[in-house]
Length: 362
Ligand SMILES: [Zn+2]
Image 1 (tube, rainbow, N blue to C red):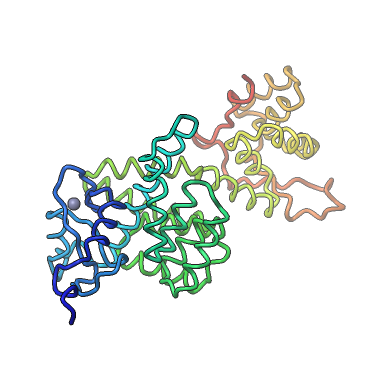
Image 2 (image 1 turned 135 degrees about the horizontal axis):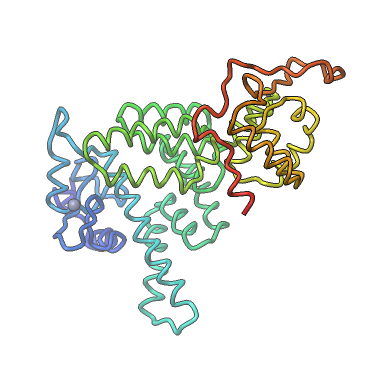
């Protein structure tokens, strides 16, 4: 064992690099005011390669030392996840600082700062971080080059997932890799990370279910910030719309006009709604459903009919027992024969189900 491989001896140049790319800040709590130390992620002090080193404050370092049971807060895999995420945050901040000063005279220091992160990653063969760096500054060619380099080095499931997601190519994630990654997140009760991966894979309902599991746990435990944060993420990612789109597809497949109408209303797709109502005008008139007929009148700009049908809908007098029109049992060439009105499916049973006309009529 050489002298430099004794405990705690990280080559000075390497230590400087690790501190630089971490902004001398603990990658877990990210509190820039705390003193930090360099931690060996696999706890082997002789393994002094860049990828095994993370900057931690003393509090967070202690959390890696508690062993066994539920008290062990941070294992190596988690520290790696936190570290890589933090390095990306630092790189992003520096990249955006670079963009901001783009049109002004940049100082040598700023230029050096902007390129040195990429140099450090390249020097240390940190291809995933290098790919992320180029992704941040919008250089997709170099991003993809280093994604391929990273994929050539036997990456683990999380890394494959992360790289393909960054590339916008979740279709290239092998199914067994995806399943193992999802199983691992479930084992750790890491529902929000699992939710994000499910969304990446296009499995929106399962993803939302996992988000809600996490949010429910957070609310029950009084952790309102993460609960609010992930609720916001659901809306920001437009996952609510995705659910409406899925149900729109289902109702098209089932040839159920009512729920097509409702989905289009909720999605705010006015032109598609008008087209749908007009295409099915004959069936709607025969249905005696005042809700649908008032919508049709609205689509056809027939104000008189609209007012009459709204009155009828409020009174509930002229409508039959239900209002759902099913086409699926109708022979296509015999559409005249009958309209199936399913009296068991009650519509407009709550105010929330009422067609929201306001947003279209304004
Ligand atoms: Zn810390």
